[in-house]
Image (cartoon, rainbow, N blue to C red; front, side, top):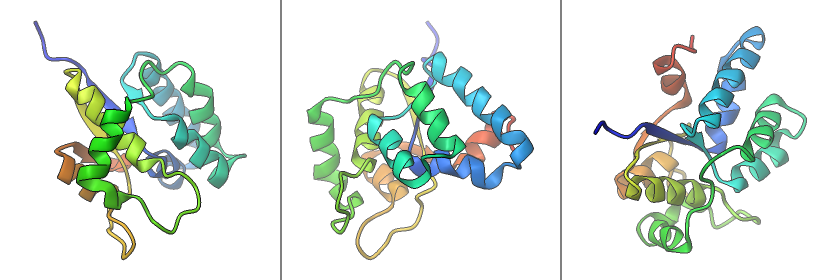
Length: 162
């Protein structure tokens, strides 16, 4: 019996980063490849990521991609016990000054859930700097024992960047 496939859990910053680093004539190809990965269960993200993208980039390719692919994802909602675990260990990932629900704990909880289901899991995030009000996603991943990588590295590893 082989090792289970790696599942990549994307956060909002990672999806936006595709548009920032890929030339305009390559963006659709990259998102098409991400769609193929999502359709076979290798990429996932929680609903709040789509809501974040709608707020930040409603008429932009990252939002269109995430919204269009959300319904085909195989796992998107971790149970409350995983969310509680995130908040107990890395609750400082939530910015107390945000006036809306934060997607970051849900991304982390989904990653923990998938890891407990036996998958190799990597959180893809470009949130790498701690702020005075909250810790970064990479710091939270480290506290929770989750692997992580930036979108640039993810795309390089899949032959999509540069």
